[in-house]
Image 1 (cartoon, rainbow over the protein chains, first blue to last red):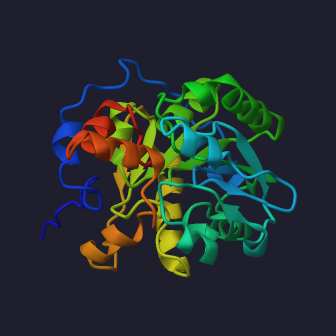
Image 2 (image 1 turned 180 degrees about the horizontal axis):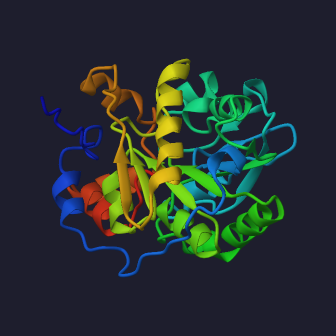
Image 3 (image 1 turned 180 degrees about the vertical axis):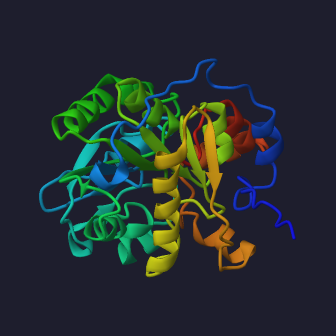
Length: 171
Length: 125
């Protein structure tokens, strides 16, 4: 018996009038980009990135939400480094576009360090990287602010750490 | 979000985007996409539900292992265990974001139009 393939509805949890506009909106780019995996997963170093506005208040500044309140189309383009051993009690989340209540309960919903540490222990990946990354995902400039400093810096760090693949998740 | 993935991929590091809005990732032609039918903020699932988070994370590994060409997409067949109306309310901030508050003043469909054009990326895609 054939099982119907599950197809995610991108618009299930957003206002109903988003669907028509977004489905008919033009593509953001004409080109594809591709880098093939060259290292098998059981030997690969994996890093994670979240856009949940995660930061570590003891050692890091929050994201600049005050400026966003003054300039509603501006979003803080800076990034924070999250060490793999960071724990729940050390974390805070600065994001005006989502309710972060669940993130204060379990950061793994946005940055699943514990799940990937399990994969490492089981030998399914070679290594969970020592550092991971957070940005605050609200942008209205198609990422132009990120391209300036944040993306070159994260990419440099990924290369220095010999990361074989990056898992990104929007908030 | 997908713009981040494209930049890193262009720099020579493979990426996979785990997203509740695969349609936005499609428009950016992201290299590898894992789709989840979850509310914003919850790419890997429910808080405290390690099994659900693990299943999503496993799909990300599978995408890295098996994709051989750009615009690869794999959807996670998990239904959000909270009714849609409650989940719709729960992911949203208690106070409307500055961008949404600004757009609402412009009229009923302004937020949707802005989301479609990318004028306001609401929320992160």
